Length: 246
Image (cartoon, rainbow, N blue to C red):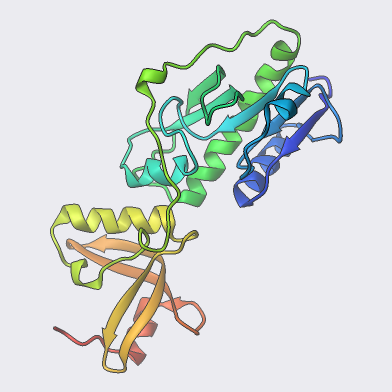
């Protein structure tokens, strides 16, 4: 593929994941270009900025638009227990995740089993592949973006600490509740950070939960970070902080 100059807009670790994937597919940003690529920028671009690029601004959106518009499509795919997800290459307009689609494809990795980090890497690798595939045709006017079916749109929101709380009292609940706890760890453990308050013989302990599994219908942490301590196994935590049974 001929070298294509484009400007990149991105402002966080999600954007960095996309940029790393793009570089693996031979796409390297420049200080100038007829088109721009935007991923997780965190700001609303003005119409003047969008229109300053002859071919507009393209977005690698990690969902099968119009599904999962908004700030948290990867986390939401896991929390909603979706069987499948994918990537859309979209042309930006003045509304959020509303513009026409150049191309979209599913990925093989299912949100039902992946962590947010695993899913993010797979989605942006596919997104970079798709972008490298369609940019030449798009920039030569051989590919015309198609409007989304806005009537089928679904939306996501930004998650906070309340969403990431894992109530210790529910760790041995019915399977549906246990599965939600597992999804929260896979989706939210990096940001905003899943945590619980553990009743121990040494008092209430706030503990981050980085990894967990389900065993015999019980939610069991694997790797934790007690407040003010280094990361450790759950068994190591319990040896120094036996749980008080209610």
